[in-house]
Length: 478
Image (cartoon, rainbow, N blue to C red; front, side):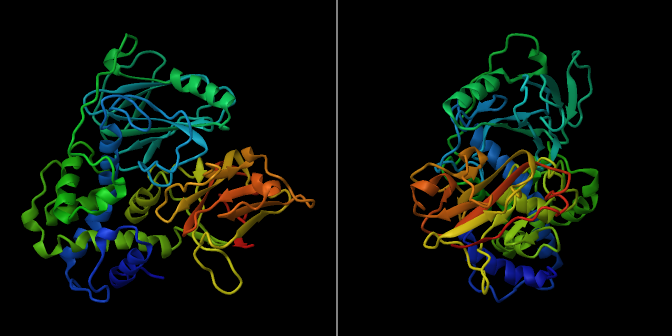
């Protein structure tokens, strides 16, 4: 399907209404396009999509860091947040959260000076510490795959920084002032393993360069009472009108410059009052566009999930892409990942196949907890990874689902039971399949749900998902 402006305005809005991803973007008549032929309107739509990751990253930063000190999933700027156990169903800070690793994260601002980040000796444990710039590009990713398990120290510098670094400190230059260190350390979830990972987290250090090698006490964070700490970040972004959105985007562009590859987009955005380094000139934006730009633009982003001209592969009902972490000028793809999987890794580090419908013989239908489903891995065909694999359960908004086992994902750490022929069945349903099968049970809600598989450090030798030589089994009704 070719994505045209017409299909975006109609199909995108219809998809948006059907998925209920953004109730604030309801439209009166999705069959009418009042702006057909208005190039300035479509330019504004393109600008909205272009800026969506940067705005989403900033709103995430505000919510995560708007606390006086580190607690739970939040912490002030420049301070390491150490999740001590897996997130639960109340976690709403990031869409599609991970239930297989303990996050060790921090937001830093490298505009004024670099920050020094140290990682202890991880030995044989799998880990990675991807570093995202303000545009959600993973510009560096120290970890087991790339830099090994030994102790390592990095200075994260800003786009214009020049200077000397201490011996033994490697420079990682960020393209933007906003940097999100989104570390993940694998953990089995047992009390013993929690203890071991906690010790590794406590050895991770983050200090400004001027305090490196000295005693440094992080200051209390500044709390802004105007920041909404309850609503999901995606909803906060999506409910902005065009003026609010572009005003924030223009402000963010001052410290988070576009890349050289964005020159064409930068030149076009100037026509509607968005110029890097300057405040937004709203006089250049037609007042009739203010409410419609976000709904049309977000509809186009979500339409890309269904009709992506090859970006999304569909294998046995599982959709996945190998275009994550580094996006170039694929702005729609970048915005899509920011909307449904903010913080996604490079494909060499992780692939995230997602399934929303069962693969039935006649007609594929959305997953519902009123039905029982099964996924079978044939003998010797478990997911080929060098890190780990899992299947996570989400509701239709990509958040965890409460269940009696407090199990949000299923993987090899559940000690899965094999069938006599060596195959392994995964039971996906609302009610327990029985005590003898509970080790292989992924609990589902009563309503619609979404499945996401995680393949960390996928094997690059056949069979591999990277080249399509390993095929994901379909999920069918039991």
